[in-house]
Image 1: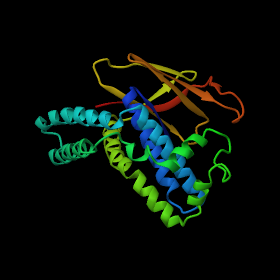
Image 2 (image 1 turned 90 degrees about the vertical axis):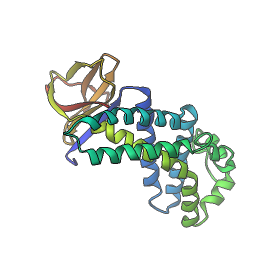
Image 3 (image 1 turned 180 degrees about the vertical axis):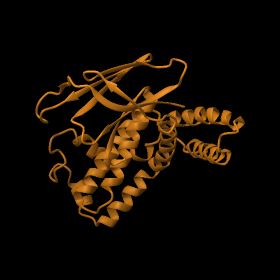
Image 4 (image 1 turned 135 degrees about the vertical axis):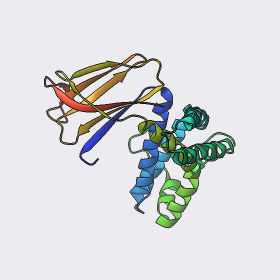
Length: 256
């Protein structure tokens, strides 16, 4: 898989939210791997992005609905003899357990951080270039001067509720990604379009390209079809344009 890069396009708003949640949590974990001051600053900045996300969207409710929907679809497979029933039951049990955990989380997902004075002041200043200097936020500068162990322990406490949500997000997205296999095809002069099956619960479009490819896909999708334009860019400062070459690639339309 190191020889490929995968581009994903959500086909509904719920998938868009889950992908954003997954990416933010991955970045947050990476920022917390070390004990440097700037890693702690990066982790807090990402945590604020998470707070902003869950304030706009009811992630917890969307996850419970998606777990219920997927569980109902998977349960129908129990009557099929060619299905690994043991593995299927493990997944259904995991879905049920995660749904119960989410249901047991009272209130808004980020409510434990809404009255946090440090995060509140940092959130206001992040939109200002250089707005988190020590003369702007002396309390934040003081917090950053604490030991890396103390900073990391506090960060773990703050993100704990998000960890429970991430486990559900990863299960949901993992099942959706595994619901389809990649197909090989070609885009004539860098353009490809295909209709979507209206009777299928399309959720995610995935495009797989070799890492050495000199083009990248720009994907747009609606309810009835999706379009992929392959763009090339002479250098990072120039505007990308659609290639004139025929491009071989792989794609998967995930629906569960």
